[in-house]
Length: 224
Image (tube, rainbow, N blue to C red; front, side, top):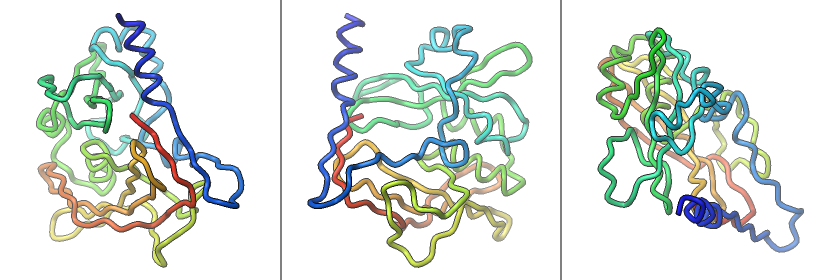
């Protein structure tokens, strides 16, 4: 049964690409690099059984992206497969067509602990006292990711006259955080959006605005 489930998952995740007439061959945008990607390298600790211990479909190391958190702990992302009526606690749903969900695993001393809800995350890492902490909170608790340059991603062109890289600024005792979002589990040109969030000292993250900043000439369907 697990084998068939894996085969079905791979088939559903197949990428379909339809190029615009007269354009050069498609190159899928490179968003998973060291400075831009929310997801880190595959977790080296997964070989120690993290995926099995915490019932994760995939475990990834996100310690670098969230280095602004305090206390500074090794932190791993756990992606697990649920269903449409998922009852297992999670931080956020990551899949559109397939019901995947995100939680985190932290290492405290020699022990690993799962962070299954936003409330648990806030309890461990709040208060938010620096811009770097605010960026880490916004990344951890939303679908958005940082980009520390304004170069157009591969295969994309700018559609906004003003594009800023990821940053955070303090406003009235809170932080305004500038991140990016792309719906990769969809059919269309899969544009990038710049998204601003408000992060409070007690770790509440609220979206303020979003605008399209990069788009492509290619129609892509990715079911995930």
